[in-house]
Length: 206
Image 1: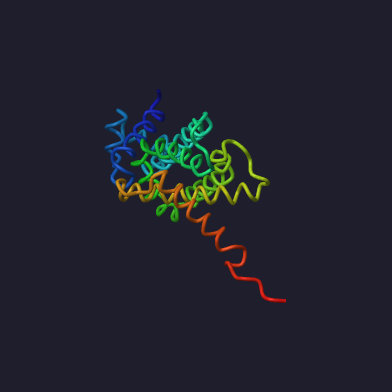
Image 2: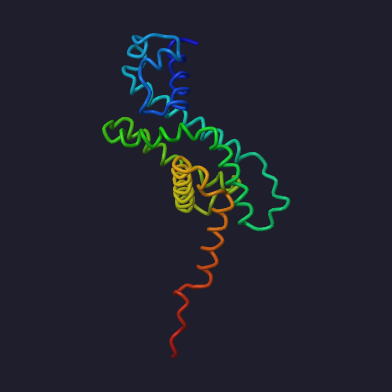
């Protein structure tokens, strides 16, 4: 590999081990076996290098998640949609486990993105792409009825995903499990059905 690839690999390693805010240029040089001048030559600054590495790390995880959810899941004993939902989220959480430290960096960089229009645009585009594609992953590769439904479902799943990531970063032992998420969906669905279309109100006498 050349110095650029060495630096990117080192930045990904440092993101995993140290977190975005604690990485110094000297950490990157030591991990890559390059020099300080290489950072400026190939990326312009340490921050630009870390931003590229973070974006690639998130993409690596998204690709891994897509492969995981696209592969066949054993649903032989999953007798209802809640069990299938739980199985899908088990896959997600397994995939997430190796990227917990990198995801912490994701939340760090979001605050910095407000001061970097280029990074903010890249993150925003990534979220929009995620909303459009993530629904199909959770729907076993089957598209929803229309593009609007796909985007609505994608936004819902992405909100769950980001929320679970944040909770795992703060308190991994008590963060929601796949079973917790499926049970919450079951409770909400039951309450929606019981309340009826008008909150359970009896029709007025005519």
